[in-house]
Image 1 (cartoon, rainbow, N blue to C red):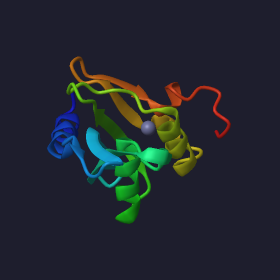
Image 2 (cartoon, rainbow, N blue to C red):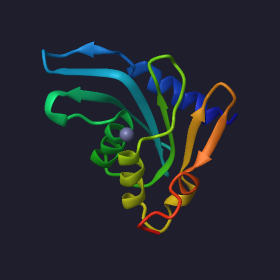
Image 3 (cartoon, rainbow, N blue to C red):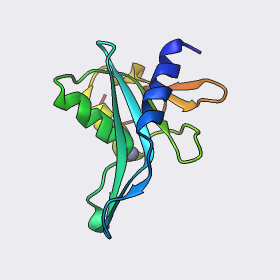
Length: 131
Ligand SMILES: [Zn+2]
């Protein structure tokens, strides 16, 4: 496995911190690291709220990347509560497709860190409404 995935896993692990913020908001059960095309790594955690105001760790990491002036995603990794990695939800896939319309297909996503299984965003967004 490419060393960059280890760096990304460690970055995401460093912010994985499940906690209750208020009676209505919890966060940090899932964390994510996004590597931009420049090579910088941005992290984010999930934020879960009442009334559906929360956000997934992946999108939070992508928003962090955008906040810092970048918009080209190279690689994505998220860590679930048990330490394993998983595929992004439909909303996160949709955001990545819209951000990188025309060239999102090659974004790499770690889906199983234990065996280094990587998929491409194009492979998990078949027949998407945006090409
Ligand atoms: Zn998501």
